[in-house]
Image (cartoon, rainbow, N blue to C red):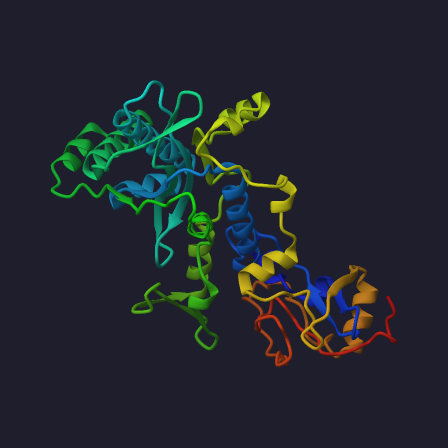
Length: 398
Protein backbone atom coordinates (compact mmCIF):
# COMPACT_ATOMS: atom_id res chain seq x y z
CA UNK A 1 0.00 0.00 0.00
CA UNK A 2 2.78 2.43 0.95
CA UNK A 3 4.75 1.55 -2.18
CA UNK A 4 1.64 2.12 -4.31
CA UNK A 5 1.22 5.52 -2.66
CA UNK A 6 4.87 6.42 -3.33
CA UNK A 7 4.39 5.47 -6.99
CA UNK A 8 1.27 7.62 -7.30
CA UNK A 9 1.63 10.23 -10.04
CA UNK A 10 4.97 8.88 -11.36
CA UNK A 11 5.09 9.12 -15.15
CA UNK A 12 7.38 6.07 -15.42
CA UNK A 13 4.44 3.87 -14.38
CA UNK A 14 2.21 5.00 -17.23
CA UNK A 15 0.13 7.99 -18.18
CA UNK A 16 -2.63 9.37 -20.37
CA UNK A 17 -2.09 11.91 -23.17
CA UNK A 18 -4.51 14.86 -23.01
CA UNK A 19 -4.68 17.19 -26.03
CA UNK A 20 -6.60 20.29 -27.05
CA UNK A 21 -8.42 19.62 -30.31
CA UNK A 22 -8.28 23.31 -31.28
CA UNK A 23 -4.65 24.40 -30.75
CA UNK A 24 -2.95 21.03 -30.25
CA UNK A 25 -1.68 21.88 -26.76
CA UNK A 26 -0.93 18.68 -24.83
CA UNK A 27 0.14 17.37 -21.44
CA UNK A 28 0.68 14.03 -19.72
CA UNK A 29 -1.48 12.82 -16.86
CA UNK A 30 0.21 10.21 -14.63
CA UNK A 31 -1.73 7.25 -13.23
CA UNK A 32 -2.86 7.42 -9.61
CA UNK A 33 -2.61 4.75 -6.89
CA UNK A 34 -6.33 4.77 -5.96
CA UNK A 35 -5.50 3.96 -2.32
CA UNK A 36 -8.40 4.74 0.02
CA UNK A 37 -7.85 6.42 3.40
CA UNK A 38 -4.12 6.89 2.70
CA UNK A 39 -3.35 8.89 -0.43
CA UNK A 40 -4.97 12.32 0.11
CA UNK A 41 -5.27 13.01 -3.62
CA UNK A 42 -6.87 9.70 -4.61
CA UNK A 43 -9.04 9.48 -1.51
CA UNK A 44 -10.32 13.01 -2.11
CA UNK A 45 -11.87 11.87 -5.39
CA UNK A 46 -13.73 9.16 -3.46
CA UNK A 47 -14.81 11.78 -0.93
CA UNK A 48 -16.34 14.03 -3.58
CA UNK A 49 -18.08 11.15 -5.33
CA UNK A 50 -19.43 9.85 -2.01
CA UNK A 51 -20.88 13.26 -1.12
CA UNK A 52 -22.68 13.54 -4.44
CA UNK A 53 -24.01 9.98 -4.32
CA UNK A 54 -25.16 10.21 -0.70
CA UNK A 55 -27.05 13.46 -1.18
CA UNK A 56 -28.49 12.37 -4.52
CA UNK A 57 -29.44 8.76 -3.82
CA UNK A 58 -29.74 8.13 -0.07
CA UNK A 59 -30.63 11.22 1.96
CA UNK A 60 -34.18 12.53 1.71
CA UNK A 61 -35.23 16.17 1.61
CA UNK A 62 -35.98 16.38 5.34
CA UNK A 63 -34.10 18.17 8.15
CA UNK A 64 -30.89 16.50 9.29
CA UNK A 65 -28.34 16.97 12.05
CA UNK A 66 -24.69 16.12 12.50
CA UNK A 67 -23.81 14.09 15.60
CA UNK A 68 -20.40 13.10 16.95
CA UNK A 69 -20.14 10.31 19.54
CA UNK A 70 -16.80 9.94 21.37
CA UNK A 71 -15.49 8.00 24.37
CA UNK A 72 -12.82 8.38 27.10
CA UNK A 73 -9.17 7.58 26.44
CA UNK A 74 -9.14 4.66 28.85
CA UNK A 75 -11.46 2.69 26.52
CA UNK A 76 -9.88 3.56 23.16
CA UNK A 77 -7.06 1.00 23.45
CA UNK A 78 -9.53 -1.89 23.17
CA UNK A 79 -10.58 -0.65 19.74
CA UNK A 80 -6.94 -0.19 18.68
CA UNK A 81 -6.05 -3.86 19.22
CA UNK A 82 -9.40 -5.26 18.07
CA UNK A 83 -10.73 -3.37 15.06
CA UNK A 84 -13.83 -5.57 14.94
CA UNK A 85 -15.06 -3.53 17.90
CA UNK A 86 -15.40 -0.53 15.57
CA UNK A 87 -18.45 -2.23 14.09
CA UNK A 88 -19.92 -2.56 17.57
CA UNK A 89 -19.11 1.09 18.22
CA UNK A 90 -21.21 2.07 15.21
CA UNK A 91 -24.08 -0.17 16.33
CA UNK A 92 -23.95 1.16 19.87
CA UNK A 93 -24.17 4.75 18.64
CA UNK A 94 -27.11 3.83 16.42
CA UNK A 95 -28.98 2.04 19.23
CA UNK A 96 -28.59 5.07 21.48
CA UNK A 97 -29.68 7.57 18.83
CA UNK A 98 -32.52 5.37 17.55
CA UNK A 99 -33.94 4.84 21.03
CA UNK A 100 -33.62 8.53 21.84
CA UNK A 101 -35.42 9.70 18.69
CA UNK A 102 -38.18 7.11 18.85
CA UNK A 103 -38.95 8.12 22.43
CA UNK A 104 -39.13 11.80 21.46
CA UNK A 105 -41.32 11.39 18.37
CA UNK A 106 -44.74 10.29 19.59
CA UNK A 107 -46.04 8.50 16.52
CA UNK A 108 -46.86 4.93 15.68
CA UNK A 109 -43.78 2.92 14.56
CA UNK A 110 -41.45 5.91 14.02
CA UNK A 111 -38.18 5.23 12.17
CA UNK A 112 -35.22 7.62 11.90
CA UNK A 113 -32.54 7.28 9.27
CA UNK A 114 -28.79 7.58 9.82
CA UNK A 115 -25.48 7.30 8.01
CA UNK A 116 -22.62 6.54 10.41
CA UNK A 117 -18.95 6.98 9.48
CA UNK A 118 -16.23 5.75 11.83
CA UNK A 119 -13.08 7.83 12.20
CA UNK A 120 -10.09 6.66 14.24
CA UNK A 121 -7.79 9.69 14.09
CA UNK A 122 -7.40 12.85 16.12
CA UNK A 123 -5.79 16.17 15.25
CA UNK A 124 -2.24 14.76 15.44
CA UNK A 125 -3.12 11.25 14.20
CA UNK A 126 -3.52 9.82 17.68
CA UNK A 127 -5.89 6.85 17.88
CA UNK A 128 -9.28 8.31 18.74
CA UNK A 129 -12.20 6.14 17.57
CA UNK A 130 -15.42 8.11 17.26
CA UNK A 131 -18.57 8.22 15.13
CA UNK A 132 -19.72 10.95 12.78
CA UNK A 133 -23.44 10.60 12.13
CA UNK A 134 -25.73 12.22 9.59
CA UNK A 135 -29.15 11.61 11.09
CA UNK A 136 -32.66 12.74 10.28
CA UNK A 137 -33.88 15.41 12.69
CA UNK A 138 -36.92 13.33 13.52
CA UNK A 139 -38.59 10.13 12.31
CA UNK A 140 -40.49 8.79 9.33
CA UNK A 141 -43.82 7.14 10.12
CA UNK A 142 -47.06 6.02 8.53
CA UNK A 143 -47.45 6.27 4.79
CA UNK A 144 -44.46 8.47 4.04
CA UNK A 145 -44.90 11.11 6.76
CA UNK A 146 -42.08 12.77 8.68
CA UNK A 147 -42.23 14.32 12.15
CA UNK A 148 -39.47 16.68 13.30
CA UNK A 149 -38.04 15.87 16.72
CA UNK A 150 -38.22 18.37 19.60
CA UNK A 151 -35.15 19.97 21.18
CA UNK A 152 -32.46 17.49 22.20
CA UNK A 153 -31.34 16.80 25.75
CA UNK A 154 -27.76 15.77 24.96
CA UNK A 155 -27.00 14.73 28.53
CA UNK A 156 -29.65 12.01 28.35
CA UNK A 157 -28.39 10.91 24.93
CA UNK A 158 -24.85 10.80 26.32
CA UNK A 159 -25.96 8.57 29.19
CA UNK A 160 -27.67 6.17 26.79
CA UNK A 161 -24.54 6.00 24.62
CA UNK A 162 -22.34 5.40 27.66
CA UNK A 163 -24.57 2.53 28.79
CA UNK A 164 -24.51 0.94 25.34
CA UNK A 165 -20.69 1.09 25.06
CA UNK A 166 -20.01 -0.25 28.56
CA UNK A 167 -22.58 -3.00 28.10
CA UNK A 168 -20.97 -4.03 24.80
CA UNK A 169 -17.40 -4.06 26.16
CA UNK A 170 -18.46 -6.01 29.24
CA UNK A 171 -20.19 -8.60 27.05
CA UNK A 172 -17.01 -8.91 24.95
CA UNK A 173 -14.95 -9.47 28.15
CA UNK A 174 -12.85 -6.38 27.43
CA UNK A 175 -13.61 -4.64 30.73
CA UNK A 176 -14.74 -5.60 34.22
CA UNK A 177 -17.51 -4.39 36.48
CA UNK A 178 -14.90 -2.72 38.67
CA UNK A 179 -13.83 -0.52 35.76
CA UNK A 180 -17.46 0.37 35.07
CA UNK A 181 -17.91 1.33 38.72
CA UNK A 182 -14.80 3.50 38.57
CA UNK A 183 -16.00 5.28 35.42
CA UNK A 184 -19.41 5.85 37.02
CA UNK A 185 -17.76 7.71 39.90
CA UNK A 186 -15.90 10.11 37.63
CA UNK A 187 -17.17 13.68 37.62
CA UNK A 188 -16.65 13.81 33.85
CA UNK A 189 -17.21 10.40 32.30
CA UNK A 190 -15.21 11.15 29.14
CA UNK A 191 -18.18 10.23 26.95
CA UNK A 192 -19.36 13.09 24.80
CA UNK A 193 -22.10 13.72 22.25
CA UNK A 194 -21.96 16.72 19.93
CA UNK A 195 -25.03 17.86 18.02
CA UNK A 196 -24.75 20.38 15.21
CA UNK A 197 -27.39 22.85 14.05
CA UNK A 198 -30.34 21.73 11.97
CA UNK A 199 -29.60 21.38 8.26
CA UNK A 200 -32.68 22.28 6.23
CA UNK A 201 -33.67 20.35 3.08
CA UNK A 202 -32.77 23.24 0.78
CA UNK A 203 -29.21 23.54 2.16
CA UNK A 204 -27.79 21.03 -0.30
CA UNK A 205 -24.26 22.45 -0.37
CA UNK A 206 -23.98 22.28 3.42
CA UNK A 207 -25.19 18.68 3.42
CA UNK A 208 -22.79 17.63 0.67
CA UNK A 209 -19.84 19.31 2.38
CA UNK A 210 -20.72 17.54 5.62
CA UNK A 211 -21.00 14.20 3.81
CA UNK A 212 -17.53 14.74 2.38
CA UNK A 213 -16.15 15.74 5.78
CA UNK A 214 -17.19 12.59 7.62
CA UNK A 215 -15.10 10.31 5.35
CA UNK A 216 -12.11 12.58 4.84
CA UNK A 217 -8.55 11.21 4.81
CA UNK A 218 -6.72 10.85 8.12
CA UNK A 219 -4.03 13.44 7.27
CA UNK A 220 -3.58 16.51 5.10
CA UNK A 221 -0.54 17.13 2.93
CA UNK A 222 -0.97 20.89 3.34
CA UNK A 223 -0.31 20.55 7.08
CA UNK A 224 2.84 18.44 6.60
CA UNK A 225 6.43 19.70 6.43
CA UNK A 226 9.17 17.17 5.71
CA UNK A 227 12.64 17.96 7.08
CA UNK A 228 14.87 15.93 4.80
CA UNK A 229 18.14 16.45 6.69
CA UNK A 230 16.67 15.09 9.93
CA UNK A 231 14.20 12.58 8.41
CA UNK A 232 11.39 14.16 10.42
CA UNK A 233 7.85 15.30 9.69
CA UNK A 234 6.33 18.40 11.29
CA UNK A 235 2.54 18.27 11.37
CA UNK A 236 0.47 21.35 12.17
CA UNK A 237 -2.89 21.44 13.92
CA UNK A 238 -6.11 22.48 12.21
CA UNK A 239 -6.02 25.97 13.73
CA UNK A 240 -2.31 26.30 12.81
CA UNK A 241 -1.45 27.20 16.43
CA UNK A 242 0.35 23.99 17.40
CA UNK A 243 2.57 21.44 15.71
CA UNK A 244 4.07 18.05 16.47
CA UNK A 245 7.31 16.55 15.19
CA UNK A 246 7.42 12.89 14.14
CA UNK A 247 10.31 10.67 13.21
CA UNK A 248 9.80 9.43 9.62
CA UNK A 249 9.05 5.86 10.71
CA UNK A 250 6.79 7.07 13.51
CA UNK A 251 4.89 9.13 10.97
CA UNK A 252 4.38 6.13 8.69
CA UNK A 253 3.26 4.02 11.65
CA UNK A 254 0.78 6.70 12.73
CA UNK A 255 -0.71 6.94 9.23
CA UNK A 256 -0.94 3.16 8.75
CA UNK A 257 -2.79 2.69 12.05
CA UNK A 258 -5.81 4.45 10.51
CA UNK A 259 -5.95 2.50 7.25
CA UNK A 260 -8.92 0.06 7.25
CA UNK A 261 -8.27 -3.64 6.80
CA UNK A 262 -9.14 -5.24 3.49
CA UNK A 263 -12.92 -5.42 3.20
CA UNK A 264 -13.50 -3.37 6.34
CA UNK A 265 -16.47 -1.01 6.05
CA UNK A 266 -16.13 2.43 7.61
CA UNK A 267 -19.58 3.76 6.60
CA UNK A 268 -22.85 2.09 7.57
CA UNK A 269 -26.52 2.86 6.97
CA UNK A 270 -29.25 2.37 9.56
CA UNK A 271 -33.00 2.71 9.95
CA UNK A 272 -34.81 4.38 7.07
CA UNK A 273 -31.52 4.69 5.17
CA UNK A 274 -30.46 1.06 5.64
CA UNK A 275 -29.83 -1.05 2.57
CA UNK A 276 -32.76 -3.32 3.51
CA UNK A 277 -35.30 -0.47 3.78
CA UNK A 278 -34.04 1.26 0.65
CA UNK A 279 -34.23 -1.99 -1.28
CA UNK A 280 -37.80 -2.68 -0.14
CA UNK A 281 -38.97 0.81 -1.08
CA UNK A 282 -37.32 0.59 -4.48
CA UNK A 283 -38.84 -2.83 -5.11
CA UNK A 284 -42.31 -1.61 -4.15
CA UNK A 285 -41.90 1.75 -5.91
CA UNK A 286 -42.77 3.59 -2.69
CA UNK A 287 -39.89 6.02 -2.56
CA UNK A 288 -42.03 8.72 -4.20
CA UNK A 289 -44.86 8.43 -1.65
CA UNK A 290 -43.29 10.92 0.79
CA UNK A 291 -45.01 14.27 0.25
CA UNK A 292 -42.18 16.31 1.77
CA UNK A 293 -39.46 14.70 -0.33
CA UNK A 294 -38.35 15.99 -3.73
CA UNK A 295 -36.61 13.15 -5.52
CA UNK A 296 -33.42 13.99 -7.49
CA UNK A 297 -33.91 14.30 -11.22
CA UNK A 298 -32.02 12.02 -13.57
CA UNK A 299 -30.56 8.57 -13.10
CA UNK A 300 -27.85 7.45 -10.71
CA UNK A 301 -25.31 7.42 -13.55
CA UNK A 302 -25.56 11.19 -13.81
CA UNK A 303 -24.14 11.47 -10.29
CA UNK A 304 -21.09 9.28 -11.02
CA UNK A 305 -18.48 11.84 -11.97
CA UNK A 306 -15.46 11.02 -14.09
CA UNK A 307 -11.96 12.00 -13.04
CA UNK A 308 -12.08 15.39 -14.80
CA UNK A 309 -15.23 16.57 -13.05
CA UNK A 310 -13.92 15.34 -9.70
CA UNK A 311 -10.66 17.22 -10.16
CA UNK A 312 -12.60 20.30 -11.22
CA UNK A 313 -14.63 20.15 -8.01
CA UNK A 314 -11.61 19.48 -5.76
CA UNK A 315 -9.19 22.05 -7.18
CA UNK A 316 -11.82 24.42 -8.67
CA UNK A 317 -10.24 24.13 -12.12
CA UNK A 318 -11.23 22.17 -15.20
CA UNK A 319 -8.42 19.87 -16.42
CA UNK A 320 -10.17 19.49 -19.78
CA UNK A 321 -10.09 23.21 -20.58
CA UNK A 322 -7.05 24.30 -22.55
CA UNK A 323 -5.02 26.96 -20.67
CA UNK A 324 -3.91 28.55 -23.97
CA UNK A 325 -7.07 28.83 -26.05
CA UNK A 326 -9.77 27.73 -23.56
CA UNK A 327 -10.74 25.02 -25.98
CA UNK A 328 -11.89 21.52 -25.13
CA UNK A 329 -9.22 18.97 -24.27
CA UNK A 330 -9.71 15.20 -24.37
CA UNK A 331 -7.78 12.05 -23.54
CA UNK A 332 -6.39 10.76 -26.84
CA UNK A 333 -4.48 7.71 -25.60
CA UNK A 334 -3.41 5.74 -22.55
CA UNK A 335 0.26 4.71 -22.52
CA UNK A 336 1.16 1.59 -20.53
CA UNK A 337 3.89 -0.10 -22.63
CA UNK A 338 7.30 0.33 -20.97
CA UNK A 339 9.18 0.91 -24.24
CA UNK A 340 6.74 3.56 -25.44
CA UNK A 341 6.81 5.26 -22.01
CA UNK A 342 10.61 5.35 -22.15
CA UNK A 343 10.68 6.85 -25.68
CA UNK A 344 8.18 9.60 -24.84
CA UNK A 345 9.79 10.57 -21.55
CA UNK A 346 13.27 10.62 -23.11
CA UNK A 347 11.97 12.84 -25.92
CA UNK A 348 10.53 15.23 -23.33
CA UNK A 349 13.63 15.15 -21.13
CA UNK A 350 11.77 13.54 -18.23
CA UNK A 351 13.36 10.10 -18.24
CA UNK A 352 16.11 11.14 -15.80
CA UNK A 353 13.42 11.69 -13.17
CA UNK A 354 13.69 8.16 -11.87
CA UNK A 355 10.82 6.41 -10.18
CA UNK A 356 11.06 5.23 -6.60
CA UNK A 357 13.97 2.82 -6.11
CA UNK A 358 13.44 -0.46 -4.24
CA UNK A 359 13.92 -0.05 -0.49
CA UNK A 360 17.21 -1.49 0.72
CA UNK A 361 18.03 -3.00 4.09
CA UNK A 362 20.38 -0.11 4.82
CA UNK A 363 17.53 2.36 4.86
CA UNK A 364 15.09 4.24 2.60
CA UNK A 365 16.33 5.70 -0.70
CA UNK A 366 17.33 9.34 -0.81
CA UNK A 367 14.75 11.48 -2.62
CA UNK A 368 15.80 13.13 -5.86
CA UNK A 369 15.45 16.85 -6.40
CA UNK A 370 13.73 17.96 -9.59
CA UNK A 371 12.21 21.24 -10.69
CA UNK A 372 9.24 21.54 -13.04
CA UNK A 373 7.74 24.59 -14.67
CA UNK A 374 4.09 24.95 -13.66
CA UNK A 375 3.76 28.57 -14.82
CA UNK A 376 1.34 27.75 -17.62
CA UNK A 377 -0.45 24.87 -15.92
CA UNK A 378 -4.15 25.06 -15.14
CA UNK A 379 -3.62 22.53 -12.33
CA UNK A 380 -2.03 23.19 -8.92
CA UNK A 381 1.67 22.47 -8.62
CA UNK A 382 1.92 18.93 -7.30
CA UNK A 383 3.87 15.78 -7.94
CA UNK A 384 0.51 14.15 -8.68
CA UNK A 385 -0.02 16.24 -11.82
CA UNK A 386 3.13 16.69 -13.92
CA UNK A 387 2.47 19.30 -16.55
CA UNK A 388 4.40 19.13 -19.81
CA UNK A 389 4.44 22.34 -21.83
CA UNK A 390 5.67 20.67 -25.03
CA UNK A 391 4.04 19.93 -28.34
CA UNK A 392 5.12 16.61 -29.84
CA UNK A 393 2.38 15.92 -32.35
CA UNK A 394 4.83 15.13 -35.13
CA UNK A 395 7.09 12.97 -33.00
CA UNK A 396 4.32 10.79 -31.60
CA UNK A 397 1.18 10.94 -33.71
CA UNK A 398 -2.00 9.66 -32.08
